[in-house]
View 1: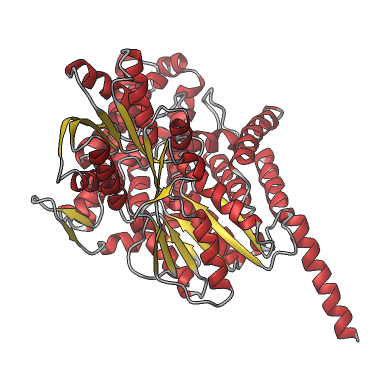
View 2 (view 1 turned 45 degrees about the vertical axis):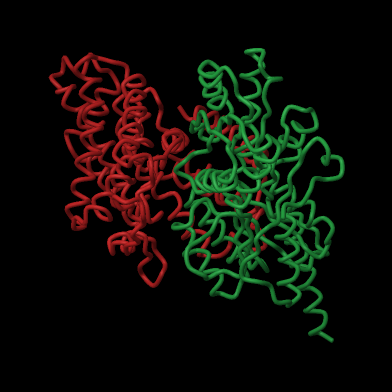
Length: 316
Length: 310
């Protein structure tokens, strides 16, 4: 924990030095950083649960894309009410996750393979249900012409900022997800089961822990968080893009790992992930406000990941 | 006196922080923020290069480049950052219209001039839109092909992504251009803008047809892919290849090498963006919409810098 806090402080100091004419000192910069990381942060909540249980989830970006498409389809094209659309999307996301979890638990397939398969599969489903098109407020009619409809109010509600324009609703959703994971991991049997399985699966099984059920729960929740992320993404983009979220899984995993949760499983907390989310969010923001070129940005990102993980290693 | 010293000190501090933070040229009078939707396409890399080159001739302008890496929300953040940084003008080449309409409008309503390049945003809350007309370019390509083939011939059309407007316009325009002629389209396929796809589709066309007179591809890489397929079959001398975009290191080079018979320029608008930015910053009136002229490059005219399309 202390190391992750130190890393975050270090990043903040870098931001203070390279403040881009004082932009870093403005509150709005931090508010927008929080909004920008929110979707990634929501994904990394689910990834944290899976990694603690000793697994990995590569499918989060694709399930996010599928969810964004479904949510837009339900609300804009089919005219469902907001609660129905949200419930439908969350069910679909959780079902995808539970399917991966079920395959991993039942057939003892490696999580890397099973979720890689889900990553490809869910992207395919997203393209199928969207017809390869973005689901937007321009609705194609049977004769090929376009009908322009209003953005559903739920989009504006989720994409908005509240408390006198100071807090993005999506950031609030992220905070809720983090608190949910904290309660689950630190206060419930289900949470303790995940740590036990991640620490030593055989021992957990002998101790009578329902390993299969716990794994399906972990991946199912990861899928659920993807659906929430997908809804947040669609609401902010005002459309459901079947390509949305590609490579997001890498960022979400990086956020968990940079926070200090080990990929070996059995340890870590949601607060470490929250710190990881802030570290990566601030790094991106600092590079962005300073208009650092693409070449430099990519090289720096590579170097920073290695340094951060080396730094974390020293702790354990 | 003290006021003056205080002012000087303030100036010195702000200069120092400016230099320390970003290392910008301090003589620049205006900062222009440029957000590119992605730098994965050579055409967009060229657009940035054109802007950079045009801006270098004007030391009073300093351009901050940002790359949104094909992410709408990242591009929205760029525009908001530019507003916060207090840039004097924003140039944006949007990834998509819907998600970027609001940030562009917010910046524009805060009094920052916004130039929208190549792809549009919805509504009219921006200062100036600069873009080329794909349909016109497609039509010119159609007419040129009809003329070059003497009014008749067997043509393969390799289309760009047909769900994208450039693909649709380059197709519709082309069909309008050849309407008066007896040109036959014997094979058409969607290559999704990608050279490997174009090569595969062309292999099918070569296998099916004994005689092909010309390949019209919606971009130069696809025309090049078709050429490679024909060469692998030993048939590249039988037919001509025509592409669109005419980037200096791509289409124009292929024309120079004799691989393509012609390439039709899809201008990036980088130069015009800087010219328009200067006009706006010096208080001149600019039109709401600028349609860029396009050029055709052939073996005959390439050394003279192409020929402007009517």
